[in-house]
Image 1 (cartoon, helix red, strand yellow):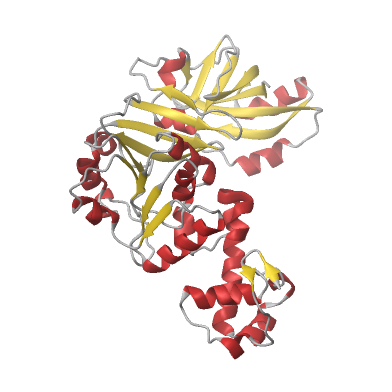
Image 2: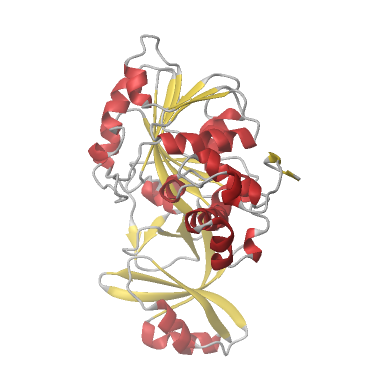
Length: 400
């Protein structure tokens, strides 16, 4: 019988040819026996356990579950990969990983110090040789398996601590990528960066003299800490979410001091540089409201556009011209009102609110949408903002 995992002989009973244990080879045998899990969805958990044993059934069912979850990050590639729950949660989406990889010279060797399940390693291998370190032996096995599925033959997986290897190597590394582990051994999320593995400050000190190095970190870390690491700072937006901060270091780093990078499928990355200019606020919406991408907000790029901030709601800008930009979505202002008069304004426009957007206000959006109803014919977006402790609602329609 042939499957995408290779050729194997199907047997009547899994336990007849190998006992199930924690080794990856035995787990792969189970995958083969289930014909790459193709028949597993037709079996109930009880039937699977009866046929292959409780432990084997639990592992197989977990892989099915994780492969479904991984589709968001890896697309159809996830059906050929193996996962571990916590490592998948930390894994880089392939679309973002390809941006990381594109920053390094085509064909140049890159060291991935913290490879995990292989999201970044796979993307790096598409552009050149990679040495991938993973200090968890079980994850290193999964990494090697995942890379083999995509013929990443010019990758060298090393089950070792990448930072220690770097510190002990007398030959200076030229291009390096690192994504420090932000989970404790018991699975807890770590909030102090000095508890990450490896420590980003130690990494940054080591990597500043190479040609180009990137360190992926949480965008929730304070500016003071991120800036203390030196180099350039990027906040990455993917599918409308600010996913990460990247510190870029090295003698060939030519990036701006701080910027937002917006990634969208099938489009080139868009960089928007931060600005220290003063951002004036107004409590009166102009003709257009611009709802800014979260990475644009996080990177302090709002003054770059030359608009006014709308009230106290950081992330809403307002202007008298639409001026399209990938850094925000633009809405045309139809009317401005208060909470107790919004129904009357909707009736005037023969409209209904299909969504309510808010920044810095505390409306119960689901309840409010239900109370406003859907009796009008014209769908509009309702934008909530505050100014001088007063709540305002703006009826708008999205452009484009």
